[in-house]
Length: 144
Image 1 (cartoon, helix red, strand yellow):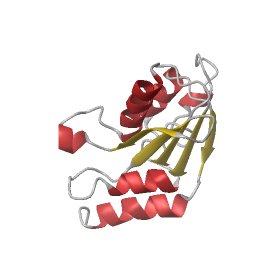
Image 2: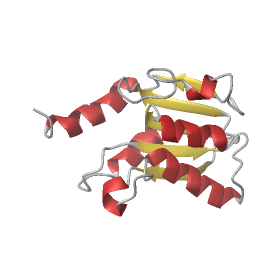
Image 3: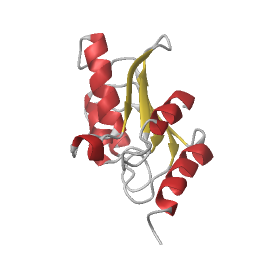
Image 4: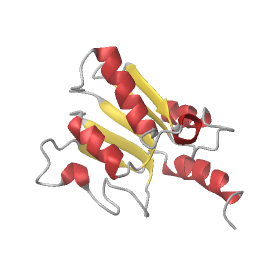
């Protein structure tokens, strides 16, 4: 999670929400990294999770990320949870819960939906305070 938090720090100054993600293989090797790039790249799919999953697929030479874990600083949204499920990651680990758009247990629970083709394990709340602090700091200057 500390590596994902460091990835979130790469967003500074871009106007993007500071969210970071890493994909780790079975052996603990980081095979994908990402941070939000929606603003920087004008990409509506430029969420940290999608960026990291794409990098992992490239590194491993496969879209199937069997045995990998997606580690992210904020509970994935529906798009990112869906991408994680479809990439066949073994687990999703996240820091802060997202009570507005989270799709791994708070608002929705896509990875554990019985209709899902693949159901990764989900672990939320890992270094939650640190993940939340990044977001609170970012939004403090933007929302009254």
